[in-house]
Image 1: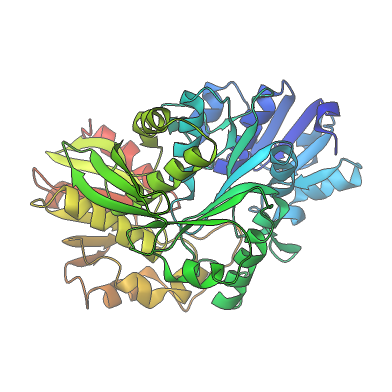
Image 2: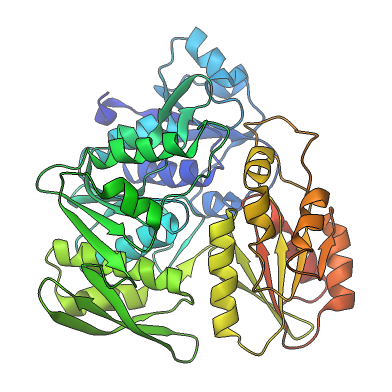
Length: 473
C-alpha cells in the first residue's frame, strides 16, 4: 500500500489511544481524517479536540460519506466484524487494522520498538523525548493521550530516520486474524521490559506467549539489537538461545548495564549505570518519576541512545526532560489534603510496581489503592496474582470489572470474589462497584496526607470529573 497516494483515511474506533496517536501521524502527513466511535468519554477526547479532529458517534455506513480511500479499524468494537467495517468492504473501500496500517507507516523508517507487559508506554515516550531533544526528529505512535513535554502521542516527521512505537503482543483481530500485532513490524532496535502472561483470551498458555515474543525477537536484523531486562526471569529464559545482538540491563549483576546507587531527591530519582563491557560508570542519571521500574525504563532508553551514538549529555538531558504521560502515575490534584495519582496499571506485576514505588516515595503516608479490574478473562486467569498485588497499600477498594469491547460477560468471576481473596493479604479491602459509592467513601474516609492511587485500563479516571466538583484541585 502506497500511503502517499491516500487522500482521505477513516478511523473506526478513533478514540482508542493507539488509534488517536496513529491518526495524529496521518494529520502530519496532511491527509483528510474522519472517524467514528462510541459516545462514552475517553481519555483521548481532549487530544482529538485539541488537534481539531472530529468524529461521529456510532458505527455504520452513514459515516463513510464521502467515501474514504482507506478505513483503519481498531481491534475493539468487533474489529473486522464491526458494521461500519462490513459496510466499507461492500463499498470496496480498502480496510486495514490499526496494527497493519501502523506497521506500514513505521516500516518506512528504522523502527525502535518496545514490548512487554508494563513499561511499553513510558519507555517509548522517554526514547521519543530523548530523540526529540537530541534533534533527531523522531516519528512515533505511542498509546497514551498525552506525553509531557512532547504533547501529542503521535507524530510523523518526513525527514527523521527513526520511528518509535510500542510493540503489542495482542492479536490483530481476535477470531478473525490471530497474528500477534508486533510480528507485522520490522524492528531495528527492540526493548523488552518484561514478559508475563497477559492475554489469556487469545493465548491458550504462557508457552504460546513466550513463543510469540521469540518469533518477534528473531526479526531483529544483524545490525540491530535487542535490549532486554534480565531482571525478569521470563525474559532471561526466552533470550538464552537467540542468535542476535543482545544487550541486557537491570539490577542483576549479570547485566551488561547494571543499575547501581539509586536514590531519591525531592521527588526525583537518581541512579548510576555500570557498563560491564567497557568498565565505565555513567553517573547521576535523573528521572522525574518514582520506582525501580521507571529506573529500568530510563536505563533501556539510555542504552538506545548509546546504540544510536547520541552523546552522554544529550541522553541524560532527554531523559531528564521527560515529565511523564497521561495516566502513568499522573498527579491529578489534592482533595481534603490527600494527593491523588492515576495510573493505567491493569496487570498484577504493574500494580506491584506502582504501589511499591509509591511506598518508597511516601514512606510515612497512608496509601489507598482504588482498582478497576480490566476484562473478565484477565481477572479470572490471574485471580490469585491479583489477590497478592496490593501488599504495599494500606487500604484497597475495587470497582466492578470493566468489560472490554472485545469480550462477553463471565458470570463465574467478579470483583466481589476478588475482594474476599485480597482480604487474606490486605485486610482493609472494600467492594465499591459504582463510582458514586467510591466518591462518597473517599469523602468520609480520606485524611490529610493520604496518597490515593486510581488504577486500571478502563474508565476509572472518570471519577476525577466528580471529584473536581467536590473540590479536587
